[in-house]
Image (cartoon, rainbow over all chains, first blue to last red):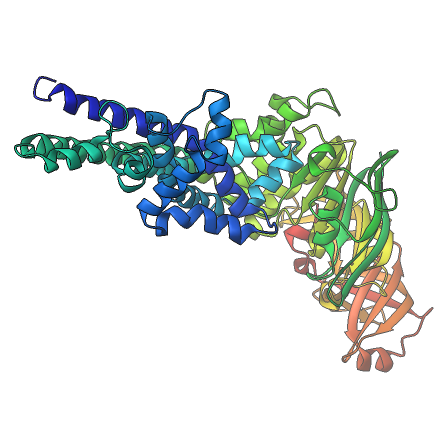
Length: 230
Length: 359
């Protein structure tokens, strides 16, 4: 990677790390919330639905500021977690949290749609054959929604790679700590002569985004062929 | 093994309030659509909780609303055959078949995969996925999947309704074998008189959410007062034995010492089978008919007459072959002077008996 300066390379590696962790750690929650919204009738369902979608419609700066208030070292949650040595503020973990929160609505939407497409009669059939609720989910629902889960994860990954507003508000723009690709592009564009660095990062962004999209298309097609059995 | 069901449930103004016993063999819940059949089966399966009721399989209580006991479907030891198959699309036929056995470790009787596969003739399909199966093949796999779950109770909700006549006659023999081979009760939902006539050991006739008659199949089907599927579908069932295959394409049967001639029935001489005689295919005559094309003439005695709402009347007749139902007009009944105890002759055209009515 000679054509990238160490500073640029650091931003790329950090972005990948942030996006991978943000996607993987939010995936179980995403599946759970999507399942609850799609299949359970409970009081406050619309409120949960609204909360999940809030980051999609709020200005990212507002989301970042709310994260800072909540998860900052002075914040109620951040303060409590700091006791256990878990710190988000101005760390790469904070960037991952911001990315995960911003990407969550996209992930939940995609997974929820695929859960709603699964015929509950198949799940009933599995129950009559002796499968408990958890087994029904693991052996019937989850395999059938796999293409949707994958689509949601890829979408979330792409969103996490590109997250800027909430990240820079919550954890600032510290090279090596919280400077992801978008923050780095922004920083390079603020200094004279930074255009070529910015351009290289732009190209990498495009390649990573396109690569993720293509990979998900291929995988999703293969899985859905297996799932539909044709 | 025997299943006892008591339940009460309302949907708006429609109330189901029934009680019945299902012994070993096939018990058919027989009635029109909307008579509450599927609701009853879903309640037995635990997919629907009735407002009140008690469902028990021998000593094993599956549901008792008074004690607050309500086993979830996965703990009821079921083999449920659905109308639309409901095979799992992402699993192969083999994986579908083995699905229930995985959860039923150690309980119930365990038929071998090979045995069930052979019984249903699905060897060639094992590695395929459901999308690559025909409707009849899917239904056979669904039957196999239910049997391999080691059930203590088999439920079949109109398993043939989605199939055409040819596929139906392909699957019916498997249910007959099931009735004769499997020791657990089979609760079978149907609105088809032909299916009931061929399969049922016991019939529970349902109308508007109530049991109007229950008992051995031949008794319930020959009762003119009980027509759960409407008078058009009324028809009694005779038990007969194949006595000869004639060269002109007819099969001769013996029913209570009377010869019956039917279009070719592909069974060996000596085979016992049931013949359903549709009430509207029977003609009555006061005098012994002569110069008639119909081959089957049974001496009969009128037992009961049930005038319908329209111009028809349903007559039950005692014959040496068993009870036969005839649907004639009220005008004919009065012209012939028919009344209970009256002797007459029941005439049946051989070709009126369709292949699906024999088995």
